[in-house]
Length: 517
Image 1 (cartoon, rainbow, N blue to C red):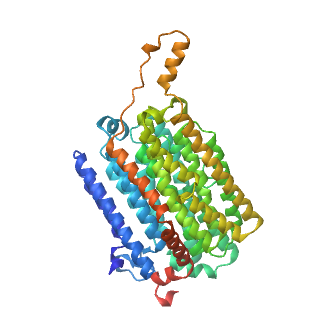
Image 2: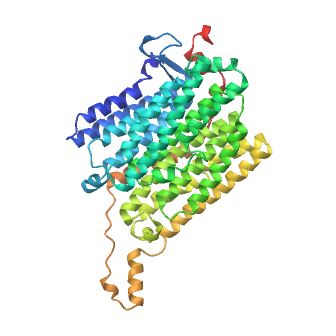
Image 3: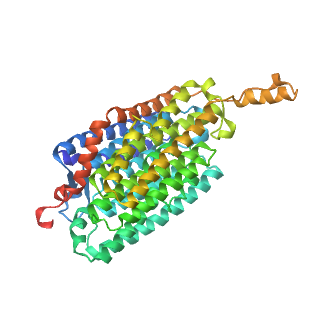
């Protein structure tokens, strides 16, 4: 009977969005509905992790349609883990947004549709992770597009509208390509159900398989921001409010990575374009992190590190081994958590220091030591300092690459090491310029005194204190990130089991009756 609960994460999010939308003048009730809905999804995802790890994949055909007709929802170890981490991060980000004061609400999220749209975004994420057919996956992506465009343009500033326009144009392009891919897949096989495709694609000629694979991979690479299809991201994410940027950075690109994993393990397991993916992973890592090092605005820097570390995940997929897949699954869970946390910390930095540009920051360690600690922990985790989860995930990926042992794999391993070092360099740059040294007010006093201009007349910056709930939500996500390190052993074993499940045929067995396999 547990399989009947599979649609509930999507239904909870959509139902919560509908209820919140019906309460436009009751922001307190909107927050309560949103928190209850997301808490329910967290609980369901945790139960899915337990039962799929014990019993294997579960599937349900909606509305009583017989396979292979109709819509199927499927949960296995991979989708359960992704849904759990995504819902935990979404809940933490929502609590952070709830901690905004009235002035910040008016400036950052001035309309009553924030909570309904946020829940609709989570419905799209949940649907994408649980989708058992490509068309339903497309529907999940479209829900994400609609909700993310609204969230990205909240406040209606010119920068946000411009960034939102870029984002929606790129998203519509990838959606159009997705529809073309769906049409081609259906024309070639007569189905879009992924389990059924895993059976029918074997009968196609290699050139047709390659064409379909390339169409799908390019579509999902745009969503995942894989080089050279990643230039839209740094111009889109930094303009949004801190909670929106955090959930975008944590979740949206990872849905694309998840789709690539499904494509390369379930639909096209013959390693046709893995060398191309290896090259793409190397370029994504190195060029992304070079862009990050060159930035002086923290949000843009983090946007480039987001692109760069997508390369690690593509690397593990491209290796085509269980070890590579397991490391990718572990690293994806880690990166969702850490990247979202760093964007929330940046929101606190902007609030406390008045800006997120390194040119206007300094001395935060003296005036806000708690904020320094909140930045330091996830920054070191992103940089891969042992024994944190970032180090464990990167080590697993590099070991998997070394086991493959081809010249190209070793080249990407070297690129991964370089990327990790440059990530530390970028984080050290933020630390040195934002937290060390003197505050801008102290610097102005010193300059005024040096020029005999009346240093006593220089006033401190008009900064705002950090709301306790925002600090608490950030601390909670940092604790969750540390839990990934403390329980890295069991989680890595789970990731290995999830990687093995991707290849053992149990997904197809759970979805299709014996006569269709």
